[in-house]
Length: 612
Image (cartoon, rainbow, N blue to C red; front, side, top):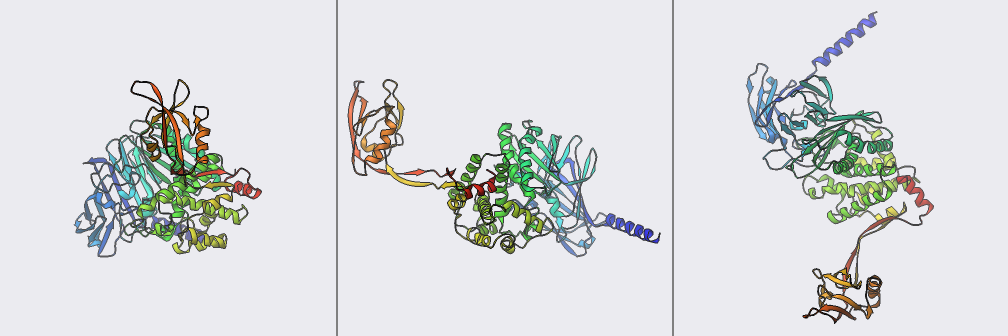
């Protein structure tokens, strides 16, 4: 009996501790909108120092852009317990110094939204905020709530008072719900900032994948998109990703979709990933076109439940919202995520191999044509906020291709038994949500988990300047890659033809883009090709003769042709044309196709890679 009594006392004491635990208690009042602003009040944890900064994020995870959210806070005031105002000083857009802070009890301020702001440096809407009285409120929480310096790890309890008839869609934990307010709970500021909320008249649906509850919530001013339709688009992809992962590391996930009926200020469309949700900003267009966009974007964003949620460096695990440190591993956070989103679909039947090869070829072409292929990817990652900012888009191109090359190399070294999905699963098991890796150690850790040769792969293609050897990589899985090439060949003059209805001969339809050879020949619009190279030309033989022309002649040869041309009397007359043959550059597009007769080892490795 004494033991039971002691246990009861301990439990009562623990419960008292939890109730009394210091935390942030925030109230966001959506019922009172003044000049497109709402008020936020916040009761704060106890402060033991004389001065302290109240901070608002300069940047948030996943954006890789400086946005200075403090620009949208106004009329900031700090108070002691009896309601007396304390002195404050604005240090920067995102830092407010509070004096005599040992007396600090609460703060209040007004928030202006970003969706229709007249401020410059437009914020990409999935990272922004919206205040549309009576219609819609987008609460990316980092745009509404700040924190005290060095006090991000306290519990945040957020009460949102909202208009009757609205619903708050979020993956954040709701600990209290009624018809006029919700209370959300987050273990720390990072978790709070990781949870967007959208209030609107409910337009939602839910379903389950792999034991996780999936929420779809849509705001569409003209009701062009139905959540059940969106479910039909993304559910097969999520099921393929569940097969790919084996199990889902989350028990809930929210797809929150805001549709614009006008052009957004940023001029962009897309989504921002979070650990348990993603927020979409898209135009109100044909729902079938929207379905494809949402399916493609959701495939990528949903995979962020693996990284950075369960695999991340210290730069992300202890994210500095004011002076951020960038990680050098964007190849993994964004690149491998993008690669896995396509791999899961082709491997588990949601995409054909031909379509998947088109995706890969597009990424190879985009990476080479639009970005610096010699820039080390680790360097691009570390400096993506400043000097390599223009190269950031390559994370979705070359970053994904690094994932592909790493996957095939792992499969090769393991005789098909181990690939990138196994590697990511092992890394998630080693670290998880609560433990960060050291940025400079990840490559060595991966090599120790897999093969020593993988360290050389990273040194050459991720840390180094060597281009990925696509031809060699893809040959291992029986795929032939022919890069784009430019060759010199004899020209016919770069003229366009139509068919003459009377005698099936070719008539020159346009000379607008005619080259030097065509000008020397003297072609005119309307000319009918009668003879070329002393051979009569018609619809039956022109392809064969024009192709043979390039093999019969060399640069400088005299080329003869006869055309039928209308004279001043309106009659067709034969006109002889001649010029010296010239060569022009012709570009052949890159191709990516299965090898016709692959070896047994190529077939086996391809099967292990994409199950085809």
